[in-house]
Image (cartoon, rainbow, N blue to C red):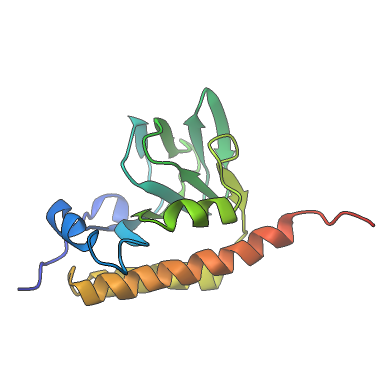
Length: 187
């Protein structure tokens, strides 16, 4: 039986939350236990959107594609602008929200697995440096939208494999974008 997706329509958006029983089952898969997407979505001009003092079991990655927002973690606060990506690690209390005057449009994914921490490190995210800038990028946005199209068809193992493969592609591609942002050292 195909499990129908749970879709959240707040903020003119879409959200696909993989049910905990399916996450538990698929976390045992030799492939999906390496990288498993557990929640994905977008909020469009999310007026009033805030997450306060939340702690998750998964990594949370948010890509701001319009407007502005903010992130607070480890007694630090960052302004989030269009083109920014940030990651909140699992078991780390964090807060974030849309700017009151120019609320963000954001895409997000929650993920876990044996490669999750490795990808986060590869991309240069840490608890003290949770923010990177990749700019406006149609390819990253397209892959995230592809994840939604796959999850709309349900949370089968095949769909989760395909959605997670888009996540692998996104991380590999983002690594190149982030490296381009790092100034080169002269020899």
